[in-house]
Amino acid sequence: MIRLDIHGQYLRIMALPHASPGQAIDIQPLGSRLAQERSVALFKSVDLEVMRIVLMAGKAWPPHKVTGEITVQCIEGSIEVKADGVPHVLRAGQLLYLTGGVTHGIVALQDSSAIVTVSLRK
Image 1 (tube, rainbow, N blue to C red):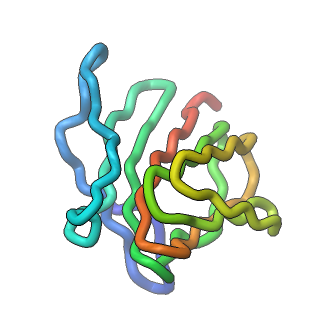
Image 2 (tube, rainbow, N blue to C red):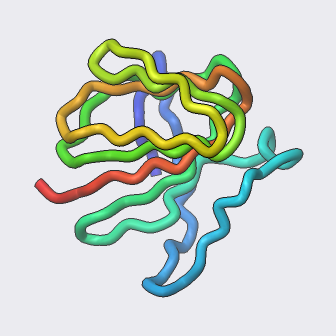
């Protein structure tokens, strides 16, 4: 699956089998495996999409908008989420909620992984 254009390149989110309703998903920190892992879509339903993003220090998701509300939860490392030009630094264990239509981008301050949840309701 190809997701966002990053400075002329495309970020690939691996299309793994999505979780089924009622199935537990491991979102523990990746630790020493972090550098070898890729961003993945954990599941997508009619109303909700949940992804685990993996970004190495200095890498970014460029600013973009989505229609629905989103949350970004830092699992490990630290990231900066810029929302409508306002920076928010998230460290492991912190979560940010954004309303739909907010321009936002993410920059990894350290090697990091995060859970991004997007409401797909229009």
